[in-house]
Amino acid sequence: MSLNIIVLAKQVPDTRNVGKDAMKEDGTINRAVLPAIFNPEDLNALEQALKLKEMYPGSKVTLLTMGPGRAAEIVREGLYRGADGGIVLSDRAFAGSDTLATSYALSAAVRKIGDFDIIVGGRQAIDGDTAQVGPQIAEKLNLPQVTYAEEIISAEDGKVVVKRRIESGVETVKAPMPLVVTVNGSAAPCRPRNAKALQKYKYAAAPSEVAADESRKEFISKRPYLGIGEWSAMDVEADLSQCGLAGSPTKVKAIENVVFTAKEARNIENNDVELEGLIKELIANHTIG
Amino acid sequence: MANQNNLIVYCEFEDGKVADVSLELLTKGRQLADKLGVKLEAVVAGDDLKDIEKQIFPYGVDTIYKAEDKRLYPYTSLPHSSLLINLFREIKPQIAFMGATSIGRDLGPRVSSCLHSGLTADCTSLEIGDHTDPKTGEEYKNLLYQIRPAFGGNIVATIVNPECRPQMATVREGVMKREVRDSNYKGEVVNLDVNKYVNPEDFCVEIIDRHVEKSKVNLKGSPIIVAGGYGVGSKENFDLLYQLAETLGAEVGASRAAVDAGWADHDRQIGQTGVTVRPKLYIACGISGQIQHIAGMQESSIIISVNSDPNAPINAIADYVITGKIEDVLPKLIKYYKKNSK
Picture (cartoon, each protein chain N blue to C red):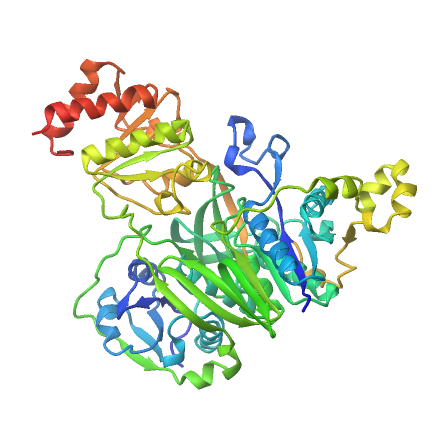
């Protein structure tokens, strides 16, 4: 049985390698200096989708990402690794979305895609670490959910078998399709780009990218597989009162740059006398030993 | 039901014991309920819940909602979500807390999505305060301030939900302190008719195997922690941390950057998205000190920072600062400990 799989992926600033210039003086984030990457756990999710595609030939993997126009990079990256197509959900109306407004917009896009068996995404994105969007999409679509997945073992007879990694150990569950699965970072890493796919999809582009570069227009119009879908709020029939800031129950009241109140630290020189002195002191006051 | 707009905590339990994180949230919940002048409530769902109130009432809980049903244990998403959604519609709490565990982080978003209530994950601090909307000028009294590091720990954000209820937050284990209010405190137990709250279709996910593996790493219980960050530089250097830890009888922890680099397993991660620790001695090796990490270790009694960067932010909260390379300093510490200990 072939499957239709939607992979939810997010383009995120690489918060793991933040340098000193990442914050502007006014305390806001200087996005320009942060490289944009494929959210790591979404790559784990993509791998699970690609594995299912191998297990069930004829299956189709579609990426869905929400973000500014440049998020088409995420779809291209997915195509290079074996996905079949992708859609960028992009609209100014989505700006300032909290997790609830984000899941509303994405669930509207999933409804428009319509035909799917499994929606799979990373457990959480590294820029927010909330792990909320997956379960919220499941709720909005009235679907069951399996979170913290480490491996989708099978998808047969209308049911998936999934291994989950939770604090207390490992749990294997059987759940009916269609459903939402969110994948943990402990799952198998994503396969690298495929050289052939890279050649094939190098010029894949979203309409807004093509519009910005007229020279590509003809080339792409002759090759429909290079078209990346781009949907607006209107395209997915989203209710604007539920999008962006308006649709976000949580508001940011204040943002503070982190300043530590300095203690009186004692400097220990990196030499034998001082280091031995420190050890002796810690032994004497029963901190160690 | 008469008493509305109270503060409620979803309590997790396993093997007949209420989870530590739930008791920590009850402690914080009691403080905030006092400030608001409302009741503290708890909801617990599962099998074999008799006497569970003995563990919960001492934290100052006024009402326990008990949903006892074989099918509610072990936890699955849909039945527990339906239970909370329907209960919250009925009793209309103003604030709801749950642990930022694999259960709370599965359940919270689902409930908040259905109630359109707003949820803040992994809070490190919860307070009550007022808020003025900067655009409309509208004033809100006594909102829940949900405070958490954001953006990879580079900033601290205060989040509020002005309009939607309940105001929901998850908190990791160990972040809040746990304190019994009064061991003789007695409230009311309300037994819920599970079939009134949960649909039969909610039991569509079947647990076919459960394999309990207790983590071998005991960071929370260790009085001494040697932790490494990205500045450790390599897996080989990280081995020096294990050697020092073994010498001192300590446990090894890591920052998120070190875990991401593959030098340590995730169960050793200290910080907002890992474990929160309060050891007697914390030796931070090559840890720059992002707020996300600091949030998980700042209450350590003594902090030693070993870092080649004399301006590492973590030095500001350290008691002792050793400026030097890990591969120079750690072997010396090991040597002098062995020499001076009996």
